[in-house]
Length: 211
Image (cartoon, rainbow, N blue to C red):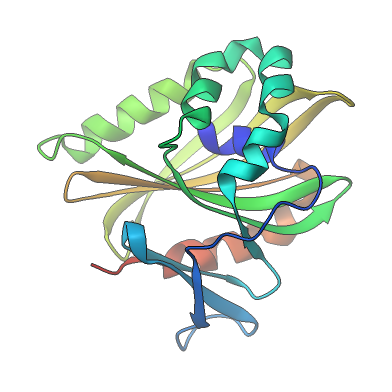
């Protein structure tokens, strides 16, 4: 749930660019106009449309997190995790603004026991999402990303903002490698989801580990 939350907190103003994200040419086979964003400190890369901008996640989230926490008490624990100095969000990238909502990707990296199996960790992650009362229409499918066996979730989530409540449509991919869980979350408005669905899928399939 941290990922959908970051979409709600990060859409105001023009946050500064991320300083530890490199951009390089995309690999052959990706749609025209994609570039690769490399996060060397955390050992991964992912391709996104060239117009998407990697931003400073801490600055983007800090701007609105107090107000967001007050208006969304059902996810206070998750909000506090985002606010930590060692936030698990290692990449936050923003794309097109649709009706005031910033379509975005964020990548969370978190450590889990190396011995835990696929069925166990996917069940645990889904259970955490289902605890949030405003999450609806959750669906899952098993898929394959470059680092290995993965799960793809889609769901809707409703949040409150100063301008009123809003719904978000989330595509979330999770893959585990060497005791680290990588969570890729793409968020947009429900009405815009068909427009971005293939972009999200192409981007997720490009995700790879660099070390």
